[in-house]
Length: 112
Length: 115
Image 1 (cartoon, each protein chain N blue to C red):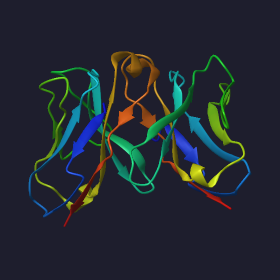
Image 2 (image 1 turned 180 degrees about the vertical axis):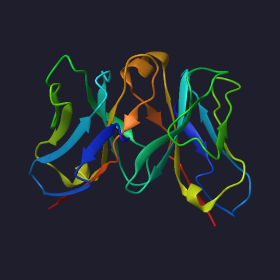
Image 3 (image 1 turned 135 degrees about the vertical axis):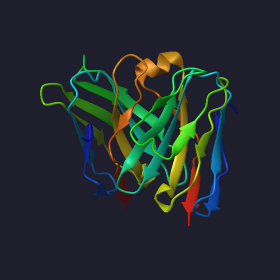
């Protein structure tokens, strides 16, 4: 059973456009939802994260929107740039030393 | 520069051979993890260790073993490699507080090909 479902698998966006990646989860005990960014040949790195006590978190051009009732969260990249081209993973975990569970990833390509 | 070091960077291995992927961190993080990354399947947890001397099984532990003799090192061993273990392997760590926040610090990965 996949605990975190991520879509789309791949995404092509024009430079300056908005990139949107969605994730859904099943386990209501999850209380931490990070997004990781991975460039080719590198390990993933934390991009932004949210807890369910807020519905939105913004850091620069990156925003997480969280819908607790729907058990969904999404990443929005405003004014997408070619340098944002990477693979993005959503993840979830629960308090108490439990490992992160990752979605399958979205390969984003931002074209000029 | 502090971080996670993985070795080897890449390796081609004959099926049936034993292989150990090394992982060392100098951040004094308590928890360490091994993930494998496969196209279309994302990152899947193999084994983890919340602190030195303890280990746990992840989502895909079969065919792999780990040990955590000290805080810094967390080697992953394939006792008898099979082609389905061809993958990119990532070691990661998190401080004890990070285990609650979920922030993982990843190494650069080890690309393993089993023929």
